[in-house]
Structures are given as C-alpha cells and as structure tokens.
Image (cartoon, rainbow, N blue to C red):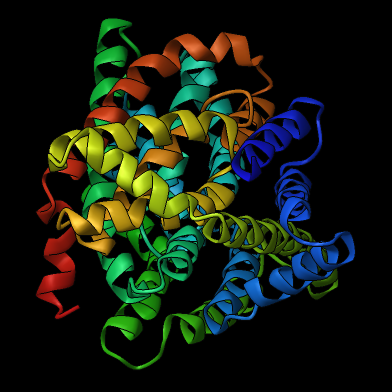
Length: 429
C-alpha cells in the first residue's frame, strides 16, 4: 500500500503541474501518513529535509554555482569560443565543432549544463546561422554538447552522487568523468561533421599559428581554473569543498580584475542569481533525500534488488535493464532528484555484481544527461530552444542522431569500465 501511494501520488502531482521538488516532498509525506500519525509525518518530513542538507560536501554546490555565474558574465565564453575556432574552425562543419568544444570547455569550467547552453548558445547560434547553418541543427548541437560539462569535472551532480552513494570519493568521480565526457564530445563531433559535409556548409580558412597562439594566451587564464581546481584536489592540497571556494575567488579575480567584464555594481545581481539557483538545487536535494529515506523505510531498495537479481544475475543484462530504466526516468525527472532517489535503489544491485561505485556513478550521470535534452522536463532543451528562438518540435529531428551517439557512448562506458576507472587508478584513488 505504501509503495502504491508513493508512486501514484508522485505521478499525479507531476501530471497536474506541481513543481517536482514539491511533488517529491508531498508524495513522501503521504506515504508516511499511512504508517505513522499525521502530526508525526509532518515532523518527520521536516526533520529529514533538514538532515538531508546536513553535509559538508554540499557546501561545494553553492560555491560552484556562484563561480559559474561569474564565468557566465565574465567574458570567458567568448574567449573559449575564439580559442576553439582557432583549433578546429578550418575543418568541415568547423563552427559546429567550435560549438561542441566550447560547450565542453565552458561546461567543465562552470560545472553547469544550463550555463554552457545559454552562454555558448547565445554567441554560437547567431554565428552559425550567419554562416548558413540550419538553425535547428545549431540548437541541437548546442543542447547536447552542453551536457558534457556535467560529466567533465568540476561537476555538481557528481558531488550529489557521492552524497547519495555514501562511499564514492568526489576526487575519484571527478577524475573518472574526463574520458567519458570527452568520448561523448568526439561522438557528437562525428555526427556534426557528417551533417556539415552532407549539407556542404562553409569551411573557414586555416588560421596562422601566431593567431592561434594569441587566442590560446587569451583563453589560458580561463583554462587554468581546471588546473587549479582539479590539480589541487588530486595533489591533496585541498578538498573538493575547499576547491569550490577557490574557484569562486579565481573566477572573481579573472572576471572583475583581469578581464574587467564585470563591474562591482553588478555583483549583487550575480549573487542573487546564484542564490536563486542554489535554493532550487538544495530544495530538490532535501526533498529527494526525504523520499529516499521513505523508500528505505518501506524496504523498496531491498525489494528492487531482489527482484532484479531474480530476473538475472548476469551483469550485462542487469546493467542494460538499469540503463533502460534510467533513460525512461530521465525523460520525466530532473537529474538531481533522479540521482538521489535511484542511487540507493540501484547501487546495491550493481555492487553485488562487482560494479565499482565510481564506475556506476559515471554511468548514471551520463545516462541522465540524455534526459536533460528530452521533453517534457528537459531543462537544457528548453533553455537551448529559448536561446536559439526556435520551437522544440523543430529541433527534435536533428537531435535524434545526436541522441543515438550519446547512447552509443553510454553503452561503451557501461561495458568498458576502464574508460571510467583508468584515471582514478592512475592517481591512486
């Protein structure tokens, strides 16, 4: 009965337009009302929400969000685009490659797919349309490539997975995300190159080495943030949480002092935007942690584990089933609550089959990134279409081949564990 109430109430609340954070919290409370008194259910939900945020690791999220806001407004996107164009602009479909590479770099620096979509898309969509690229194709490239920043560190969602798993190291997850994220980017470039060759899109002239070096110098301070943050974590100089604070300080100096793209009177607005985004993310986290606790009380993770292992104890079959379920979940649920709710359900299953928690974290995040590009709740899809000023229905067709290669990359990462685990092992994590 409790499981039925949890599922039915959650689906009903979503279907009538209740925001997902409220839907998660209310369905968890309705479930608890069946087994404990009314007043106690209210108190328990409030306590679990507060407990869900009582984690030192979560302090990194608002800092990385603020760093992303500073970078978004600080002229970093334009410099990364110019550097990417100097590298790959002369290839067939060069501007599409520039879009993908710039999204990978900016997403990796900011840790936000939405920030990459709006910052890079706001510049590249106009450039690509001016060069004769199809508007829907440009938007599709921008939307899908922006998600790579959630896998390539620093990444807020990998921090969330570390919290949900209770055992996966944030530093190991950060290192594990590099190769899968780059693999997705290369696959997207392959599709973009084929599309550009077939449609005979223009090719830019080869840039002189001196000009390429100049653009690299302009972009170097932005790129150096990755060295500071990830290098410091790997070297043991500071933790991921401390690295997030350093990222804010570095982004502030870069945007305000060096690039001078942000004026001091603009800082209150930037802080307010970061606070709004942080409040949304943390509300999703605390309500999702409450639902996870309610499910554990009802023994749902154990029952799902026994059910899946009764279907098959073959690791390949189980991973295929989990990937299929997560692909469906990603269509209807945002990535943060999906990670917090389904990690406690699926992680015990895969660990019993010998799958490393860090490897499974990359599988899960990479899978749910696809859902960010799909209706009806794909936040990156909505932002990308809004920036490109195009309807969702127009962008679906060029998205399909890009989805196909993202799924191909997902399967490769799923069944070739070394793609995720080689770098962490090399650095001793």
